Image (cartoon, rainbow, N blue to C red):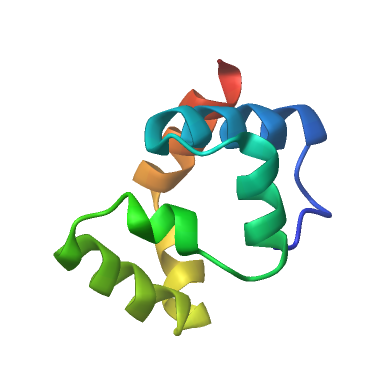
Length: 82
C-alpha cells in the first residue's frame, strides 16, 4: 500500500473505520494491507463482493479509475473526517 501521498491522520482514521466495520484490529489490517494481503478484508465480504474485489486488485488501472470517481473521493473524505 503506497501511503506516501496520504495524510497519516486520515489514513489512521480510515483504517480505524474499516477495522471496526470488519471486526479486525486496525494494526493487523494495516500490516496485511502493507504486505499486499487482503485476507481480513475479503473474509468480511460476501462471495460476490470478494470476487469483484479480487478482480479489481488484479487490475491496477481499474482501481485507479474507481478511486478517481467523485463517489470514491466523497467516501474517502467522509471516512477521513471522522
